[in-house]
Image (cartoon, rainbow over all chains, first blue to last red; front, side, top):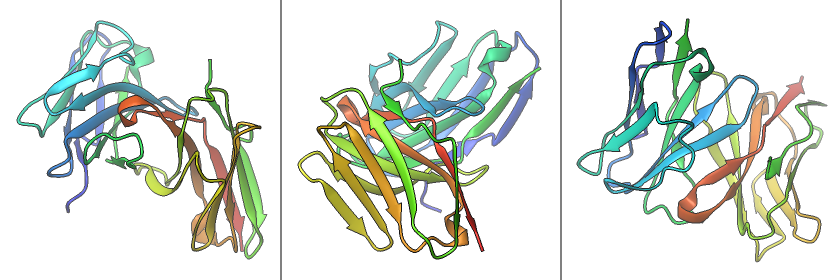
Amino acid sequence: GAGVSQSPSNKVTEKGKDVELRCDPISGHTALYWYRQRLGQGLEFLIYFQGNSAPDKSGLPSDRFSAERTGESVSTLTIQRTQQEDSAVYLCASSPQGADNQPQHFGDGTRLSIL
Amino acid sequence: DQQVKQNSPSLSVQEGRISILNCDYTNSMFDYFLWYKKYPAEGPTFLISISSIKDKNEDGRFTVFLNKSAKHLSLHIVPSQPGDSAVYFCAASEQWGKLIFGQGTELSVKP
């Protein structure tokens, strides 16, 4: 399909391991966002990309979290030395230009469980 | 500090009746608001939006009302259908289109 695609859909890993989450946005969308949803909570913003640059990283919770985007397309979110509090659903969204009146299109998320 | 709040975690209504979901915000600089619907194990789906220059926007069975002086918005679904059962998130758009979400309200529409 032509929607936002995320992989893996589920990831279970041991505390202390590194994980990498992938997002394929809608083709041609220059704006890409990562959000996190903890159990019973709303979505919290992590990082925003415009093209391959990240003008807003204000939501990354610690320096264990990083993200990159290449080719104005695929983005990866990396969590190093995972902790149990990192368990959440990580959602990626894209929009055509990142204007504040453009709805974002979301992927189905990666459910991350840290044992 | 929650800038967008949905104070009702759940709502149950009968099929055919009106569902009213509420949302409050604290930042008067917000000028664009959105409602998303989310089914389990799926990403949120955009439902309807409203700009702060309007006080109402309608799309089929869905209407969003905005009261800027009260910093309050609401989503009305009429008539409610069982397929509307989902979690509904209110969101405000900030710079770059970054979304600030409420905690969500789980709507259950009973046949």
